[in-house]
Amino acid sequence: MWKITYRVHRQKGNEPPHYETFQVEVDPEEYVLDGVEKIWASEDRSLTFRHACHHSTCGACGMRVNGVEKLTCITKIKDVVQDGGTLTVEPLRNFPVVSDLVVDLGPLYRKMAAVQAPAVHALSMTPWEGQNIAPPADIPMRSADEEYIRLPDCIECGICISACPVAATDPEYFGPAPLAAIQIQGLDKPELLALADSQEGVWRCHSAFECSAVCPSNVDPGRRIMDLRRQVSAKRLKLA
Amino acid sequence: MEPQKNDPKNLWDWFNPKGRNVGGWAFILNRIAALGLVFYLYLHLFVLGKLAQGPQVFDQFIATAKSPLYILGELLVIAAALYHGLNGVRVLLTSFNIGVPQQKQMFYTALLLSVLGTLVFAVRMFTVH
Image 1 (cartoon, each protein chain N blue to C red):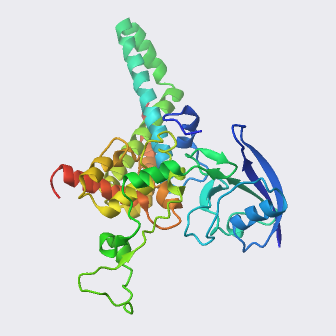
Image 2 (cartoon, chains in turn purple, blue; image 1 turned 90 degrees about the vertical axis):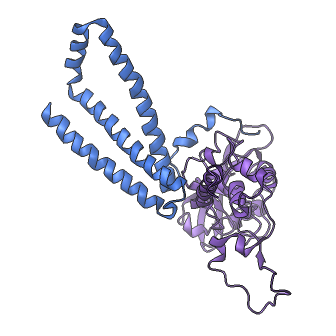
């Protein structure tokens, strides 16, 4: 077992943020979220944080670990700290802090709704994802016209928006996840073309590619935004 | 509290290198180079303004501008212009979805060419003057 120090961001209501430290005994194979839960269970029941599935599906436990955006349920302690070291846990950037490690992801959800982010989509809509996914042969299709569908990779965790330096100074910028959701759908709908080609759309991105670097679901939003720019240009120049 | 547009408190995130990846470093350097070039533009206009004060004043400034400190400043301008221009090519290409998976390698190339170009100018500027 390792003994490490968790340095945790605390903030309740309108009080100024501060940090509290907790000594935690952990198995290095455990995950950062496990340590946060231990603090809550045995040290301070007032610590607020969000979690649900513990296997990178729900996107609830996004936090900054030592300054870097991580999905804490899949971030092993041994990968971010050494025995006897200190691990800083903070809420995501570019969202309002509700309490301690919890942020209000409402702005992201509203943008995802505005871009009509699909709950499921056909494999053929997403060639990048579909290329390496073989349809499950043992599941028969009801008709020849039917398509295989899947859940989108994006788990709406908000990590990409937290890492985006442009979102830091422009909360109205649609941001990586919503723009990636437009790219997945294509630009056949005029309202999506208008959103992508707006002041807060693809042209606001400054190509830092931090979103792609931190995305825990390999959505590669940076690449999708660049592809969306190409699509928007082609539409406007009537090449597509 | 909801983050505010153009909140100067968050401007630091443009330059904060902590936890940034290769693309983030390219972004930070691009901003610093851009700010340096804008500062130089105003400085350049200020210096040109000396022409209006007569040839004697301008010649006096030109004599001062040959000092190593000024040459170093000019070298920084060249370094900033080289990096900003070359990284601009990288941003332009990726903006049309060309070479996005190779954006890191393109950044390293832009950085290497900028350093090499600056060295060539440095040798020339510090030996010819």
